[in-house]
Image (cartoon, rainbow, N blue to C red):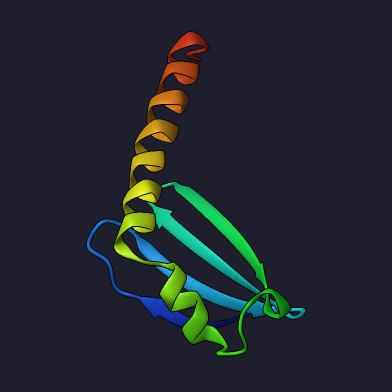
Length: 83
């Protein structure tokens, strides 16, 4: 797996990887991460530029909201089972 692009964003790290005819888009925020896989064949042939088009501000905003939910869920689980 190799990094082919990174997109700057103030609220999370966005990396795009290439592996086995797939693009893997990874979002990281602190200790949490989300990954999305796209088959190269499912795109129109523009390569990584097609991935950039998918990663619009609306999609990124939903990813950021999902990070908030992930953090909330994990915090609640941790508090239920504090060690």
